[in-house]
Amino acid sequence: MLIRMGRNFVSALAMIVLITGLFSQGGQASAAKDNRSWVEYNEKIMAKDNENGTLELELQGTIKLAKNYKVTQRGENRVYQKSLADVRVGAENVTVRVNHKNEITKVFIDGPTPIETMRVGIMTTGFAAVDHDTIVLSSQAGLEIIDKVAEKTFTAGEKVTFSSSSNEIIVTNASGEALYTTPNRLYAFTDEGSKIKVENITRASGDSSYRGFFEITTSSTGDKLNLINEVDMEHYLYQVVPSEMPASFGLNALKAQAVAARTYALGDYLSDRFAKEGFFVLDSVMSQVYNNTPENAITTQAVNQTAGIIMIGQDASLVDARYYSTSGGYGASKHQVWAEGDGTFPSNVVPYLIALSHTFDPNDPSKMLEIDTQSEEEILEFYKTLSHTGYDGNSPWFRWKVGLSKEELENTINANLAGRQAADPKFVLNQNEAGEFVSQPIPTEGIGEFVDMYVAKRGDGGNIMELVIEGTTGTYKIIKEYNIRFTIRPSNAFTQGETVVLHRAPAGSTEYTGTLDNYTILPSAFFGFEFDEENGVTFYGGGNGHGVGMSQYGAYYLGTTLGYGFERILTSYYPNMSLQKSSVLNKE
Picture 1 (tube, rainbow, N blue to C red):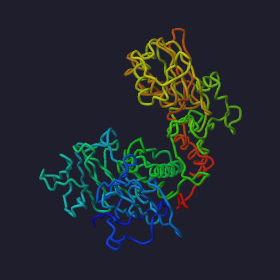
Picture 2: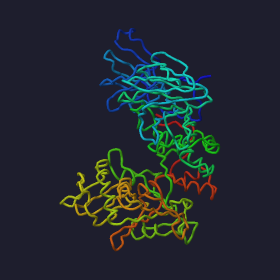
Picture 3: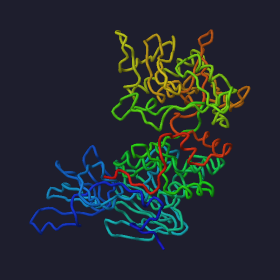
Picture 4: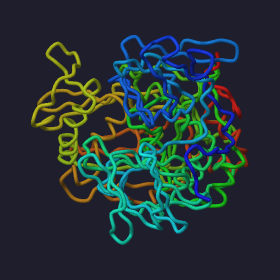
């Protein structure tokens, strides 16, 4: 039997709902009843453009919101006033009222909006872009293509190619025969027990096959295509968890990863980050990596045995479930890594994303080591010490070092500083004549010759928040760990010299045991540095990633060596939160 649009997806998250707003009791109204010039449509919301004030309906297309439109919601016992933020992409419980000017005047959300599926933007090979030149889909069970607007359904065989021209989609079968041309959105389905392979992309697994169904639309330029995979929430996690954590990390850690990934996915959904594009998440590291590594029995077991479980903060809101590869001994506080949406940095403190020590005290391994994370001397000594042990000891990233000559340091800074300033101008600053750091363009020659460098500010976990670099053209302050790591890049693509070697060591080592050549960024902002007599510099650091939330290597240790269950693993990294199942979010 072929899957159809509107089928009843059954998942453990079927009870997780958003209370989002309703404007009247009852269903659609007739415009003729009171001689008003309006009509109502009860259709799936395909996209939402907050900036331009539009909603895209599945059949009616994109419609502009009127100046004084209203959003309301039917609750259990009353009607609530809501806002456009409560109108969710993918929602099918929405009725819109459209006036004679073809503008939406009212939006009616009929009760809670279930979160049963994920809408995933599928990127090209290498996760390079969302716009595809062509899309090739195949399934051994056969493909069915539907154009809902034109009310057209046809069988396309086991393989079909989609191309675009002048804002139209051209459908071609395996023999090269053109089957159909339309300007409308198309849907591709296969048998419910089968997957659809996207043959025009390559993933690490070698098998780019997906559960659920696909939507194909023309891109904004009209000459390329966009691809969205709509899939059951738990099935989405089947293909996220193995892509984000190796199966060898064990069931306990994988369960923790499943809960974190589920919570993170819901956070992306609630953020409306990709509402304009019509999906909830991307399939890359911009959201969570999806279907880059094939499903396997233990990762699927981890998802099934935690089905529907999410993390909730003390204020009853969804936890911002950040995670990363490896801690070098300390975690970071979120507010000292990322800015608020309005650019405020440090941002607001998040009680469950705070800096913690993950290093055992060598004098008493039953305790965690505490150092003065604001002391440059203690930080440098901490990261130069290879014998420390901690949660992340199994990781090759527990300790690392990399050295650059003065010329290499100058070159990599000058190659990257202006780009970071252009991308994040409020956080890459120049010192003016009054001694103030202000945002202004970087000189063509960058910093000129390197003079000096020092840390101006560290976070509670010792992560560098502000780095000052002095050159012959001026003094520059780089703020936030991402900008720092992407300015001093230890690769000869930027240093313009010989191969740059990054050395690594797991916990308890007596010497560095592994190397990587021309690593593209500094692994973390947890590092100290020292200069030699010729002004070359060696960076001594630990960990890999931003350092906020759960360390995946740490979860591996806690779950296997210490035998922690997933609940205890999660509370070790996200204190001040609770685990809930079948929860109701934003309840009135």
